[in-house]
Length: 287
Image (tube, rainbow, N blue to C red; front, side, top):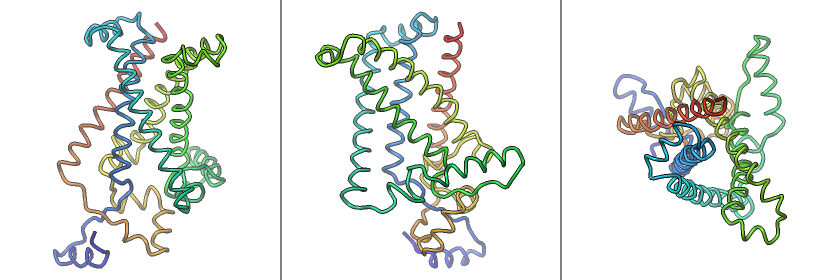
């Protein structure tokens, strides 16, 4: 990766300053996110079809893929893939934090664990919304990004356990009372519906439909963002890296045309599918 002085010299040779890009997400993180949102869309589509199986659209979907037996198969397949990805992620976090003693993974400005600043940022953000104060400045992760992360983490534990308890009911019946097995059906259904409504409304709005990201935040797909975006969205992280002399270590190449177009196709498709499922859910729920 070229250093800061080399990139500056190259841009001056062409008689103009070009936009610099900085790495935000590694390729591994982007691939993990791709697995996450792909399997989640699959689980949402199949789960909603089973939840509202008496709806016209649900019966049409089931017929299109070969019946509700096929729907259940795809639901379980997506669940297994997502579970493996979740366990790999947890193993990686524990390994980095407990084995390699990586600083900042459990606490500090680069951690996904909430702290006092996040609570302060939340109140300051509300004040800013109401025109009562300046906009808060964020570090690597804003409070809503941490909330998104832990919402998914909570959902994986609760929805995942209840789903496997239904899938392998004879095994779980050996140490769970009958009422608990009945309860997991309700928990799985309601928590799954809550997760779908949260992702397709709150998460989509916070991530892609905010004024400074509309119509889509491309960074999760390309992995990089311009210096202007970096300074505007996370000024504290930018200042901290510059102060520590680590800013040039994050320099990255600008995304190519194919990568941008491919990211747009995938991103818009995911948003379109999500919003369609949200509309069908609301229509079936209030029918």
